[in-house]
Length: 59
Image (cartoon, rainbow, N blue to C red; front, side, top):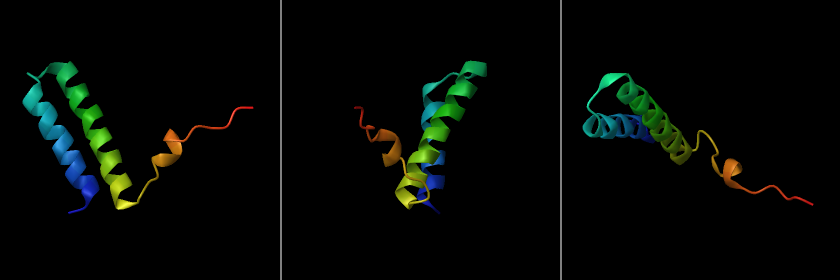
């Protein structure tokens, strides 16, 4: 199992444990699942999140 899949599952499980349900809880679960997926994919090397965090020179 890839780290992206593990991150997705972990994010969804944490949200399910922390919410009581409803539409807002579902949306929160999807958002945290997407964050977990992105972090896992970054760890696998599939995407580069460091490019988003680098500051662009202003001058």
